[in-house]
Length: 122
Figure 1 (tube, rainbow, N blue to C red):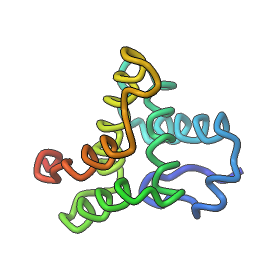
Figure 2: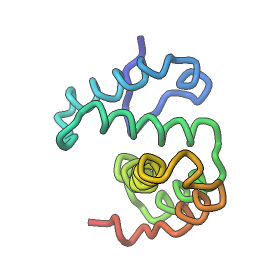
Figure 3: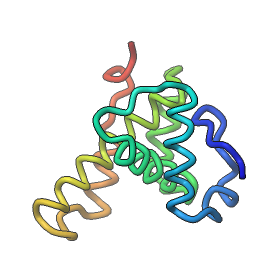
């Protein structure tokens, strides 16, 4: 099995061919291997990473635009994934609180487009 490396992701087709649980386990293992912080829940952290990687792999236009904007600003890929994850996590919370229709595709696009690379630069 391939290893997940946030800086050098697997090709989209290879990533998407993996079972979701496999993807989560790979991301969690990568964070353990690199001793990257994961907060209070390694599984939740890995799952949100996977949600972002999935959006990028399928070519979600808003996520890809945000990714490219951040990359052009010189931000590293792991930080970019976390920036995109901030939108995904907020949307998950809205859906948990208000139901599955709480976030539309238009909301998602607006929120990804509103991400500001300067807010994530060190």
